[in-house]
Image (cartoon, rainbow, N blue to C red):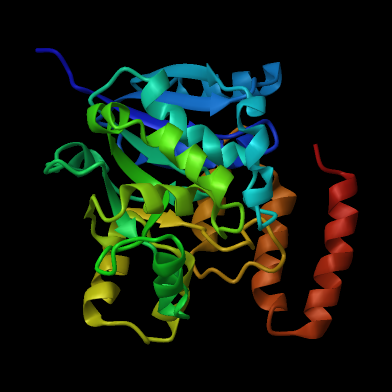
Length: 311
């Protein structure tokens, strides 16, 4: 009997490959019974990075496809990048349906870890929607989501999704030229805040099916979970979490990261070819240093010393 293969796409350049490998490793470890076609959209990998990816997938049922995308295609969109952690590579995901032959593709950002089975994401009915996604949880701390909906010209009852985890209805996306429409929208509206995520929400305009939060536990939800300032339903979503998404500007590898699930990143980092023990030691010190200025100073001094011996 032929085994089903599931298509999953990522975007990462050579500067972000370490984090992609963490996301990939976490996906494979927690879905050992599934067969995957993994696609990485990038501008070309170095030999050492290519070998690192090969080392990760060698023990799993994985076919790996390195898909080259040229950044110059998006040269008119640089004005839309308002945050340092959002680069022009974010637009690469728009062309997933043009580069991959599949009925549906699970797109995952590279700043996340998978902690459970993703099989259900390949079985949920699209019901004629463009994508399956999770609501953006930025609005849990402020009213920015409602402001975005108005600025983007979306229907008042439309919800705004986070584009870091999407299951794409490939046929419908291509038939309605979503990529082209998003690029045109962004070119005409360079003042938008969240690049292609804003563009996708403006064009899809509510025609997406909402997934449970467990498939995209975002930064604000993680932070509020520590303060018990969320509903019991959301607390259960966190308990049953499947994907932790480090959406804030400060990632687990940043000294200023306060995400309570940061240790999950290092848990999988240690199992990749990019495991640097000094990073994990630094992270553990940082957890204590955040509440103690002296420890914070010592952490920074030690980090400078350790970095001299990094490899």
